[in-house]
Length: 192
Image: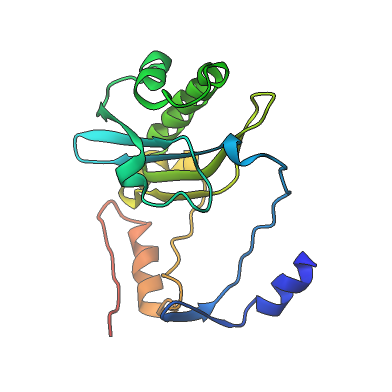
């Protein structure tokens, strides 16, 4: 059934809101049975002098306006995160039996986020099953392309595709290739 669904849409024009383009890559993941109350929301964002964490104890499709409901934690750039601070500032509405394991996961996730120079990382839902296993079901992320010189070996080869609905021009590919071979920063986006 999943294969048929993908094959109907792959490499065919699709309209998403006001943009039309081709979908070429699909992720198919196994179903993880869980209860609604096991879903959480977490987001990490980079600001100029600090990182911000947003956590909401009711994640999932209907999470709504997280900015207004989430518990928030600001961590100045370079400051270490502790599990105790995570529990105190973010996890007050999480059942006590889940707090320690969830805090440990968040501290590890934050170390990953910083180490790989993410600008944004959101997991919704982040599921914690009855046995306290943490399973990220859906994630959105942005990495900072300007950190490529620091993280290239950790990231591996990263393709910076054009936005959905817009094909790359040969001139842009040439400049991107030149950018990879020089210490200078060369960028080109053709607008018209």
